[in-house]
Length: 453
Image (cartoon, rainbow, N blue to C red; front, top):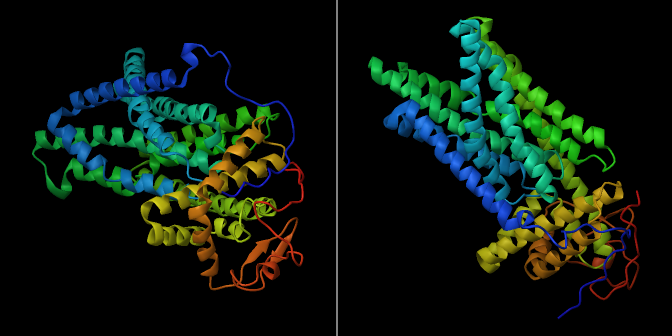
């Protein structure tokens, strides 16, 4: 069995870790059990409250209609996260928090605040308007932001930038909108049952068109602003404490403001809803989509720029930085592995790509002085994960590079080196290596400092 290459040099310093003598409430199974219990109880209570308001038949109709946009929205956010996909458990937690805990907080707080305002002002219609435009945005966006905050604090390794903030916030809001849509659609169905209306002119059809067809992205769009604040804060240095606090708060305030504008659109006249939709919602959605896609392309560029150092150390094959920095090449590698080795090989290649991406981001943060005290530990973990999957991944990635119909750019140590010929023909000439140089598990490598700019 081949020995693994030596580790690249890294700064020495204190290392983080778990407490040697942790109290019982600090154990992972206790925290997971408490969180699961909280979400389960919240789910049972909120679903019971919604069924009470809509009736059993209305609840079932609302559930069937509300679930329709969920797979599309979750798949969209998962697609954005393809460069460095986070674990599914974070998405499951985010969706469950939005659908159960945040929705329960919102329905209780909104109802209490609206009733209190109605009693204080003796004007129920004014209380409903104030509750929708002021109370609901504050309560709902704060409740959804808690999920982003929890992932940011307790799953910090999985929360490294803008895309992570957008994905966690978007999935949380998707869960919240799911439960809210059950309530609105079920209530609309009950109204139609009482009035005898049905078909395209019914209240249910109108509600479905507005909430599911026209604006399924409304709640995700609001909460994504909060996620952007947390995502930019995650890119900040460890000493930028003020920035790490103010950015999430600013994002939350923007989310509340846009939510209030959306809820208050009916106050702008007969066509107020369509005016706000066209003038604010659609442009904001387009701008945020462009920002996230641009960020994803920048992440791929980071992969291509940071991984060549590990090529020189012998951890990666020379063509891998390019293949791992191209979504097309990564997809081809997984497809090749699936054809040759089945689902197990394809899964190993997908994991290899994810670990390599995390390694590139870790080194990028280290060079900018933003890595934590566990830099060396995390680097070793990622390198060992890569080394254990290299048997599946390297042939697949080599195939992906060789299949590219255009000349690519590889990276030598310190500066880009143009690949002069297709992958697999004369590695020395391709990668700018000195004549007779050997790269692999037993080869020496030029020491580097991951904090060097």
